[in-house]
Image (cartoon, rainbow, N blue to C red):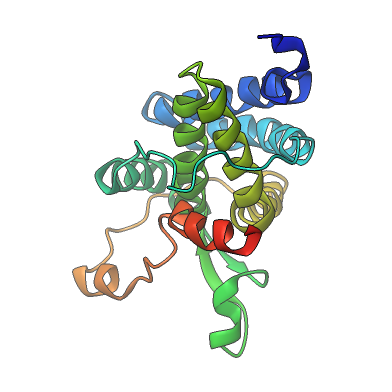
Length: 207
């Protein structure tokens, strides 16, 4: 097979893979970094990841069934909890570009750690599928990643950049946050934890 002619091996895809891999690496090793240091790293990685995602080719899926998933709910929770502890008082911010805004009369409180965990889930699943080396699987991984970028995590990434920018240049220091009450945890909306569950909806729209 001529890999040079296959879009899954194109420069835009390979460069996106490299950035997504860096993003996942820093998220997975967040416990080894200080919160403000990690925010400054993300300030540089997130814009590049957005740019590279916008350049992914528009493909059509090979398979009717959804792609295999690797990141579990336990993985998501562990990432979220680690990041929430690292970011402390910098974690929560007011968001006006959120799908839940229609259910409220004003901005909603968003979480850097939750949005990061959502994006990580998609990036990690994408990378593991892409690394299979099977052209059809790689194709569908790129297709799904672009669809989710356009419809879900792309907006989350932009929201994160705004929140991170505000914190870095505010001169504030990250403080510790007391652990939330269990009642607050139970009331937290977790409906959009796994954004790639909407893949079947996207396939239906393309058919």
